[in-house]
Length: 211
Image 1: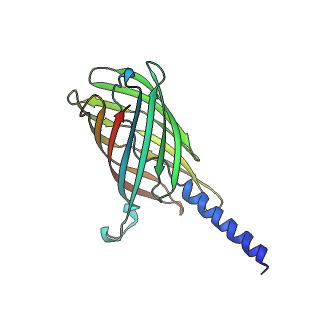
Image 2: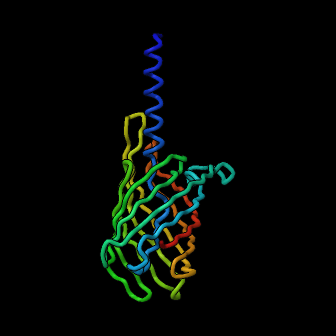
Image 3: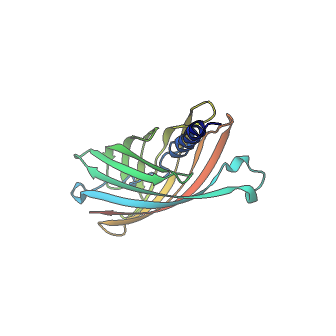
């Protein structure tokens, strides 16, 4: 085979793998936590360490489950009394790098209750969700973020659209006016390459600080 043809085939293979790897995921963790944010806090930044397992429902035993570790960072700033915008960067479940932006609307902000709406998107993914938080105390909050995320991945038929509903549950401890720690549990549920369905549970440890 001609060397140029071999080079072209290798380049196409590399691009296909990159397409699949980079665009095969969306952010796993739902930060910042849904709770009233003092507008004078300015810019809020944070990060998460995420661990989980692939396709748990498709394995014959827990010994055959494939674990994964990923990371995520975010930043958010208040544009007005009700609108917030931010960005996120992450290492995907397949260790790929991804990034995106989001906008969050504060619908209800009470002493110990928060309800919002959020939309985001990035490298071939999009998401819509409803962040909801309830204060157990002034500094300890339970939260969830029901959402649907769509991603586009490379495959043998060039692309496959995945729809991933999520219903995470998190606990956030605001240790001070400027610093907080969180724990989030959840699972992604979506279609896979073989037209089946799979579960990928995860747990995330997070921290955030206002600047």
